[in-house]
Image (tube, rainbow, N blue to C red):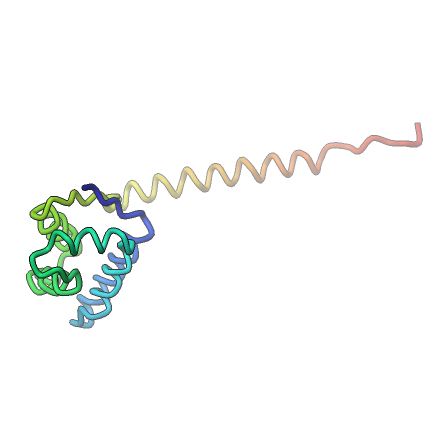
Length: 130
């Protein structure tokens, strides 16, 4: 089985993991990871777990996690889920350079759209007095 986490879920987990690192508390992180999965995905994971409890599974993963590297958390989730036959897919973190390039492209696209709007405003209106 394959589970794909969307960008929103990955971002939420990353933010929550960063908070957990700062505060030393993984309770909210465990809840956020749990919420990243759909109810159907959780049920399938629980069917495959010996304990049958995804919450307990997440507790074990978080206990094993060093608590300092967010990428390590994702690797642990991948490995542990892989052990029960679930292939976890997610968008890897973009490098700062990639983010800058993407932001630059978005900004350029926005400027192009603004230029088109400005051009439309500058065109003379047809005079009906002719």
